[in-house]
Image (cartoon, rainbow, N blue to C red; front, side, top):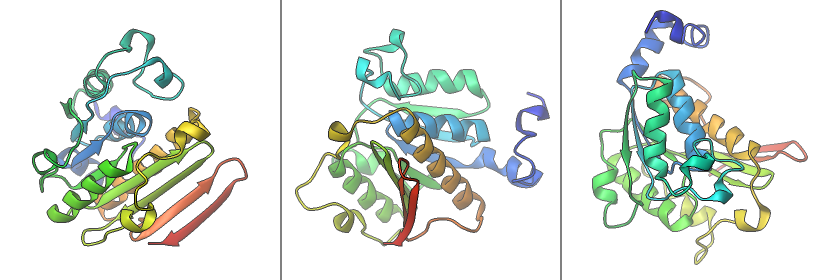
Length: 228
């Protein structure tokens, strides 16, 4: 592929920074509403190695917001759909699709020290706690994202922190999206912010949401940053 592929990256990135992205290695846990947009954007940026983890398959209710979901893919693996899509978008990127759910039993094998960054695109709190624990063990920054209707949040959990125990009440597992619904634009916006934070961490850019949570209300356009 000619150098044209990444020429619009140059300006916010130097040529050297752009070239270095091909050696970056990230993991995205979840390939649905958030994960689909995250994976697509990272691949288009030129992140060279992406692991996509999801044991779920597409259903009709995913069609309103999940980027890799199409009518023909109903019943098909979300992780495999991510691999197929990225092969079409950027064949320079090596995407490893892992078709399983993240559990306490397999997290030690799935989340390892090879990753520069892990991105949370999960839809339940128990899996998020497992992900946080293993990122901490491996010394990997975790970029958290969550959505509910008009609302979203993004933050970076650095190794050594334990945020989800404070962020989510004990005994609560599912988020509130089944009550609030989720339109197409909320996961797209939150995922884009997660992708931007991943780029900052990988390249050591300033302004990353380390130890901070950006909370947004897209209906009233209210935004706030709070410290963990």
